Length: 221
Image 1 (cartoon, rainbow, N blue to C red):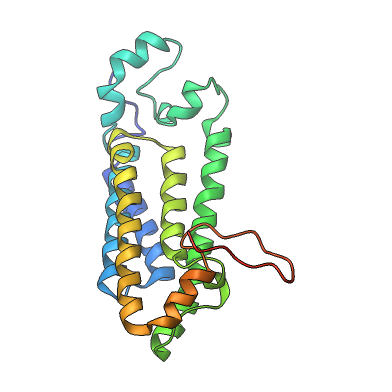
Image 2 (cartoon, rainbow, N blue to C red):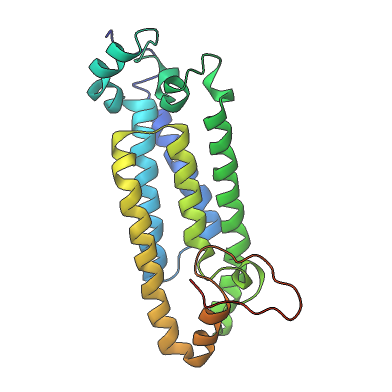
């Protein structure tokens, strides 16, 4: 395999992109509690690792280069477009930016940032007023901020999978679930029965289908 093309070694571009997405997420999320900062820090580390490979050094392509070249000899695996691994594996030979996985990634990333932007004002008002956040998206799920981060991370993973992000993704999902449970312990100690009722009515991560009049919600997942 020859040296990577000019699409790599662009460390300034990697830093600019990572900083942009981290700041973009911060502008919607604005962490306040220690749980907020932990969740945001994990997201930031994932983004830095992603763009370091996307524009800096293609570590994944080097590690898998021999296997990829042997099994997909028609692909120039050290070209920048080859970093869209899913498009390459499934035989998308047109511009990968218009491939199905790339388009799906934009939907997930956009949906995740939209969810963050919808959740934050509700949570911020509730925190300032010392009450539960139960309106808006919090009427459908208890932890929309973590769902939003997972949507964005999933979108980035579809767009540009790397060994580091593939390894860290399940760890991050598990960590977000654990942070959510820790937050709930804090809320139970602060709000008591009100939060117990909220947990019974609203699922943690996956919204229930809206029910008709007279129907009842099952116990929250």
